Length: 232
Length: 232
Image (tube, rainbow over the protein chains, first blue to last red):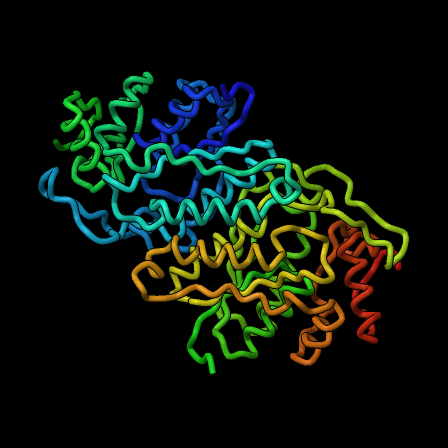
């Protein structure tokens, strides 16, 4: 149905973006996966992204360097402790210190640049506004405003050659629904990486928000969690 | 009037952004100048940006690496010839090959990230929709859409701590008016760099769109052009 139609897919190497890539591929898009080297602590996700892109048949995988670490002020890029909680249901409220300023805006902007160069009208992003950390740039109103701006920003849209669609197929799904959908599409979640603060060997901490949401999702889906945790 | 109020100022090293920085400084902002190393051919502009930031009293100058050159499709980053014209009034129409996909969107997004980290409500950009190359991301409708999106994207805005203003003080000025304004504020245009295709020694070609607009601006302002041209 979307044969020979190109899509740029933002791929962090985590559970959500791997599922978004599987969905785009299942819809028939030629997928161009895009990851960022932005000074993140959890760099295992870049290795995970590479493997996922290969396994899910992406046409190309681009890792773009962007110096967000030079800007600071996040537990994901600076020397600030990643918060841990004591149980899977004890997930912090409010926007946490793992928030990276304008991260999805920067990522979507770079995806927009690549989309224009490729003449790809669709950009997939695995944001979710249900089981998420409360980051403002995961909400539907942000996605809609970005799409509107994007179509005023680029030559190919202004000249009428393409119209950009920001596709967020996980936006209204629970984590359990995302996992079930991905499993049905053959995603191997053992190779995805969600943890904000992995051990030096790449084991998930099991206690950060991202690990909590992931564990809760597998439990609610009634499926075995294939993640390698340092602590359960 | 804006004492102790911070602003991020996008600084390419060219005539327009130097003037935008001078305007922000004259308004009393503490200016945080931001440039990008994006694989541009005209890298002399980064040296120019450094000198301009110092001379105009920026609190800090950050050069952020962003791999736009990996994405390709512009005469400014790839091996595509920069178009030259035969006279100062012969400036090409339409959006030229020097267009870089989504460049101002990427730059403003990174500026937004820094603005949030600094708690700087104002972002200055030297875009101009009068004497310009027709790039879509220099138009007021783009700037307005970006500002709207920005205030939905970041934690500091969503939580009501700051409201982002994208300031584009040159938007409706002619090049001659920009030059007169900058001169009045003490900008030394001999250190700004506008050329898309400088000689190995950093001399301006005098024949690309950017040089043509610059020369025309000085002529219309009735002022001597201090630029060092390879060819007049």
